[in-house]
Image (cartoon, rainbow, N blue to C red; front, side, top):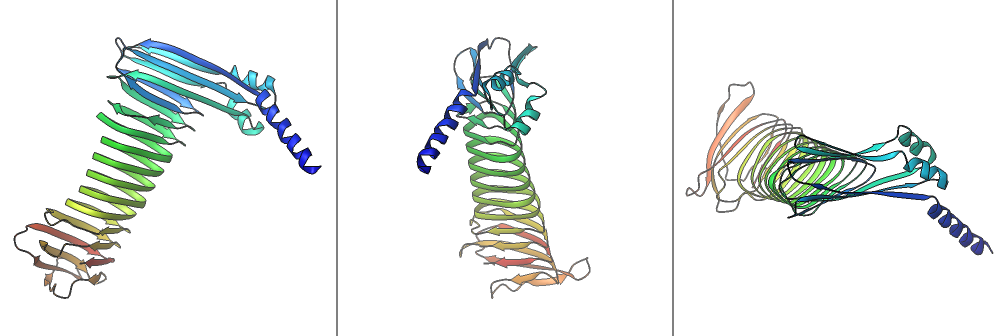
Length: 347
C-alpha cells in the first residue's frame, strides 16, 4: 500500500512540475553587413556558438521558468527579455531580468533558464559575458573575448585570432588553441594542444597535454604538463609536474615545486630562481650541459655521486656558487639555478 501511495505521489508531483513550466522563445536573424563584433550577455543559461559561411547571424534563445504555480511561472517569464542594440559596428544581445526575479528565485525555489543557440558568419569578433551558465563552441576561427562567472567554457579548435578568457569558478576545456590569453580564478583548466598560451591563475588546477610556448603567473594550485617547448613566468605556492621539456625553462618560484621528468638532450637553457621550492630535474644519460648553482646552506642537495662542483663564495652571506660541465661535450645546454631554503634533486 505504501508503495502505491509513493508512486501516486511521484506522479502527482511530476504532473505539477510539468503544469508549472512556462516557456517563450526569441528567434531572429541579423545581417552581417557593417558589423565587426557580436556581443552576447547572458545569465542563468548556456550559450552555444557555431560558425557558418553565410552572411546572417542566426539567434535562437529559449527562456524557461519553473515555479510552484503556473501563474507565477507566467508572471516571471514576462519579466525576462532579450534586448538588442545595434550601434556603429557591433550588435549587442543582452538578457534582461526584472528586478525581482533573482530575489524571488532565491527565496521561493523558482527556476529560471535562458539558453542561446547562435550561428554566426566567419569574420565577426565575438564577445561573450556569462554568469551562472556555460559557454560551448565547436571549431571557431577568429577573435573571442569571454568573461565567465560560475560557469564552464568548452571548445574544440580555436584558431585565426587571439582568445581572451577571464573566468572565475568553473571548468575550462579546449581541444586545440592557437593563441590564448587567460585569467583564471578557482578553475580547473584543461588544454589538449596549444601554440602560444599566456595564463594568470589563482587557486587553479590544470592539465596541458602539449604546448609550444607557455607564459604563466600563478598563485596556488597544481599544473601538469605533458610535453612543452618553452615555459616562462613566475609562481608562488604552485606545484608543476612536467613530463618532457624540449627547449627552455625560465621561472621565478616561491614556496612551490618544479619537477621535470625528462629534459631533452637538445634543450637550450634552464634558468630557475626559487625560495623554499622543491626542484627535480632528470636528464638523459647522454645529455650534456653547463651547470651553475647558486645556493645558501639551507638548500638540501641530492646530486649524482660523480657531480663534484667547483665552488666559490657568492656576494651574499652564507651563499656559494658551484659550477661544472656535466656529461656529453657535444651539447651546449645551460642550467642556471639560484635556490635557497628548499631542495634540489638532479638525475
